[in-house]
Image (cartoon, rainbow, N blue to C red; front, side, top):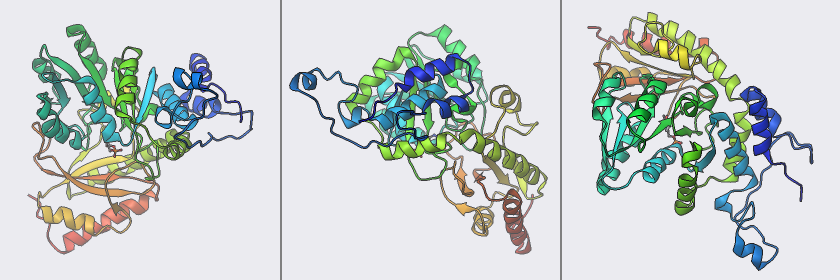
Length: 405
Ligand SMILES: *Cc1c(COP(=O)(O)O)cnc(C)c1O
């Protein structure tokens, strides 16, 4: 069996040497024992022990599949390096990473605060599941930090942030929120869904967040072929989350991890391409006579533009818009007529996708329309994508369904 290098120490040295993330991701996993460039795939549940003493002690690096394999560990080390976290644990999905965090941190009679424009399945989890355990969750206005401050209680144990928020991309002032919370309470922990940016664009932990969560399913996987999530924590919380991991047995398969490790090395390059496509799509949508509002923090007049410029500088490939008429028939026809865009959930892959979502569940609405069209711009030529949308708009106009008001 090949001797394996301890990548964790190699990564620490490379981070210390101020190398860029992309360089560290590609350089650190060189395995000069075999000479292969790629990470190695090790699948396994059982790990053999030399004798019963070794078996009983249980202090070997690998003891059982759910506790980690060389491949799952490589991915955890890579994500921890990117997030600048002490530790990363893997979950079967991005949603599971979110719900696990709530289950790990909260107990009956605790209170949590969550941003109103959060990933909506998490809101359902709070409303339907957490109430069973007498855990109360309040939702705060993403555009009003004061609202968050007024909702803080003595039993608030978790503040969950998402920035930019789902579908409408409001950007929170993470640094300022964390500073305020840490001054007010030492019992309240802050988690953040970092899926929009990925840790290549934004590092929540360096801004005061305790737990950074990523739906690796999206850009890190990049090919729509894996569902997986990560929870990265600071040193203060590592033991708590590590024990939680053992209690509930969360992990991800080595097959999944090797696919993510492969794609991770090209995330930043792909994000630059996605960004350029969003810039061009913004130009088209903001000048279209059928579009009411375009949601993207890259727009100079967006209320989020300043924070985006300060904290992100790069966009991913998603952009949303509303139509001038709030007629559901128009929304459906526009999407049903698309020839190149696929209709589908999720984002982060090479395929361009369109989806309809609604903001009905929101307490604080930035738009009067309930319906929003979300586009994920993939790697088809951007001019073909714009033409696809333009043709679809033309067909609606010819059928005279749109009534601008
Ligand atoms: C998709 C998504 C998730 C959930 O990820 P899955 O792996 O699909 O469960 C979580 N948060 C955000 C912001 C997402 O867009």
